Length: 383
Image (tube, rainbow, N blue to C red):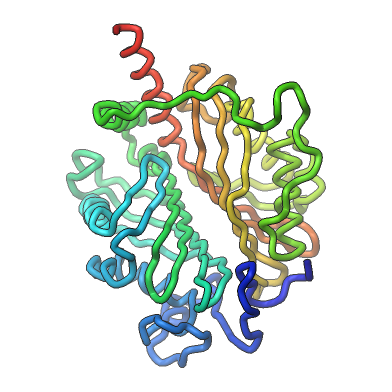
């Protein structure tokens, strides 16, 4: 693996031309990222003429659909058989994506989703993969999926990972911090989790507890080395190795080795924390709530950063049981129920250290899973 160069590629694809200039989000106003008069700066065969590069595509079409209410663009930007993986369920067709978008906009007509950063790889021949961090803010002013309006403001983070080919998103993973919104609006998380769990249970869904999660085999220890086959370059491999040490081997001291002393952590529930000790406690606390959890990296991408260093995006999955105490306070006392955590993280590496981490997972989806398991248990006991 070589050092990071501009525009990392998908494995097996041809190199992306280095002369291509793809804008980054962090230091630019929206009008600069999605301009009216900028010539196309990246090969985008099959994409609408308005888009100048893949970051422009993600930022502009998201803005048009969610902020300008051009929801019908979903028909020209998603395939009819698209699959959208969320933290509380999966959508398997485009029409349901349209319906879900409308319902969410009904409750939050003032919401604005601001692109914080886009990390990507790929090309127009083999397809693009983008990881889009959004900071959403607004007020709850209308009756909708959260009930009567509270008129309270909220701020939350979402990361959406998309697979795109010729202007069409055909697969998407979305992790939205719904618990942050619920708590800021002063609503009862247990009420909404129970309602969601009941609807899923009534539809015939239960949590299948298969026991072992394969973090290790039998009585062996975890794998000594991380599988870095998903990495495209050295910094991605270093990120995977760090995550393996921390989450699979439980070597939380690795954080002090790889994070800068003044590193900043931007976490669920809009936590803003500073320093290695605080970051160690967050990750230790997540494992504390799910002490037998496995951790698997599902995708990694990176881009050189105009602020210096490299930004790395990781999509990951944890599976375990609610067997202990940690930072997942809303789950209450240990229930033993199986919990799956779909999460996404962005890291900013600079001078060999992580200086910023954005971590998004949804505690509300975990509470739904616990309550779903309890419903299944109660039904079985009453049978």
